[in-house]
Image 1 (cartoon, rainbow, N blue to C red):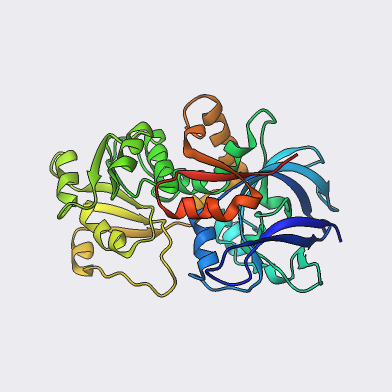
Image 2: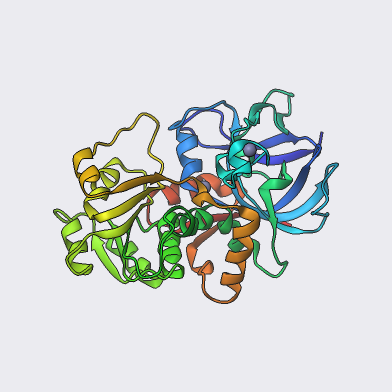
Length: 363
Ligand SMILES: [Zn+2]
Ligand SMILES: [Zn+2]
């Protein structure tokens, strides 16, 4: 099997190790993509810290873009040389969720431990999130990728495959935001900024960004927040009511995994409002709510994975918006790193001050 370089997690909480690994050739319906860029997402960090468990050793990384370098059998829509974004949404196309138009919730399990990756000794190596994109190349299913114009820079394109679809999709697909509704976005990080953009694109009336950092709130304004609230205030939702003319929001998008954020989120909601749960707390973490209030004033909670996107429909749309200047992507990148420096890039992401850090591969 061909040998590639990858950043491997051998122990939760320890630095990733750059080493040679084996990558199998694409099988039926699969493609091999030579990566140009992979961004570091908070999910990668949570996995590497052991927040959600899982098999080790593992290769994380799932926000990637590159060029197809080989195709397996029964791949009709893609060819070698195509520029693509690679997502973690491996969907079978025929289970009840896929058939019902929600491929992000595909019910067919994928055996990532016995996927295309192996150690050089031939031992199992987990292709985490069905991508394993902290590596020079990936082998993924053709349903996980979408063609993009060659002229779009791959570092920018990589962002689309997780943070952008998750944030924009949460506003448009999950919240089903109608033009004129008021929105609160909790968290102005990688996903939060995209949720703000999604709310703007969907025609929100007012968009209130909430974050613990004043610096991030300034950035939120660049992405379309009309008002900002410092989450460190006492009862910060009161500042939101003020911004929204004395009432709660129609939609609250929770884009961070912190439990206090989840517990406060319903306080921002107005009568009949709905909360969309996007941020991913650690396994076992619990939040509490007062159901009587939610029942009495008709509030709802909706979980949203990967923005409920259909990538073949939504990614070309987002690419067009970007090319028309209506979706900001370049401004999301705060640092570019080499694979060798991935641990430094992860540390920088963990400080919370970065937007997106992107690993670029040499060509
Ligand atoms: Zn992600
Ligand atoms: Zn499925």
